[in-house]
Length: 489
Image (tube, rainbow, N blue to C red):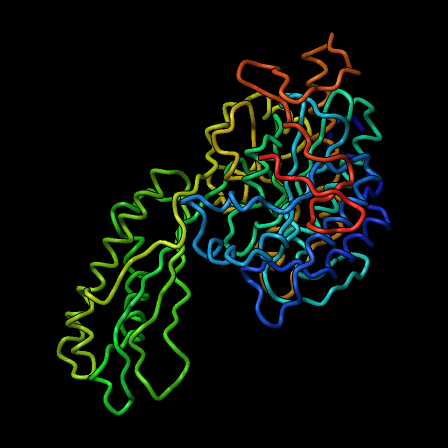
């Protein structure tokens, strides 16, 4: 079989890989932003160390393992929930990210980067493997892809000695992808520190077809700040439950019909309505959350205007509908004054498909036998959005399984071993294709010359940044036997 095809028929994942995946699935790594009282404390340090140890078999070594610098969260576009959680110093201390590399640092144009997240959404799932299917929280999103990635890198390195000499492979194993963190303290600091390549692959479930775009999302919070009342005198207070319930239905019916949404790509989700739990009182306060995905900055700005308009229209409609009903007359009369539209999250970039003119990168993927999703298939939000506008790069999203079909974020999450094998074969083929084309373009390069931090390979391009620590070092505070290093950002 020729190099760059779908890969060899023999299994690429070993029994040790199966054991690693089961170990990762048994290790709780729930995002603190999602964790409830019943969720075990996240053990990302433990999971990432196990992953780094397994990566050594593929020739990868640790170049960075550290919790994020608090400065990463002192930015206007950091979601409100993240800023609130970070008031507790233990939050960031328990959210490390890991960077591995095959070989010495090379210039960006000679580097392939893979990003995978090891944090998960909340919800404990039974961990099983029946020889064909792994189940458990994170099986498809994204611990299974993480293990298959290592198998693919290992197979490629065995087939092509130039990998790790002429071509560097970076692997980011990050925190902060789930829970609405949007990569603000996981992937973004690594990207801004320069841990990127000419080709960048974000390992998410895409049905083994690469998707060179990613939406961003904004979260609006509609709040009502009124007065409570006893159930025997409901007309005396403000009924936030009825008001927000009405607005939820109005937004669901009218938001997408707004003229500014005529050509929108991203979907809207009306959810998260809360006022209270008791049956014998009228709640005067509450909130409603609305999440809106968007494909680019212009669509995001249009969505903000459309949502503001629709909420205002909804308030007028509520007043007209309930002004004549005694129990809700006060709420109807004062609805506009009681209601605020706030933003928990907005201003994030989106990865557009503008880079599709990058024929060089497209040829690497095509020669590797990796199909591309069609333009009509919807994108989704993931950390790939932070690669928007990074010069000299091509970024795509690729992985086994599908978010919906494999029950990601839901009960019964699973991934098929056959899909993990197929993804490992794609990683192998992609790396071999990249290396072949690089060597064909630079036949007189010195294969033994490592790139140096800051070495320019093209105008305006630099290589990976200086490493903050020696291989195997950790920056976990106070850990015996290791040294603590700072964030290279």
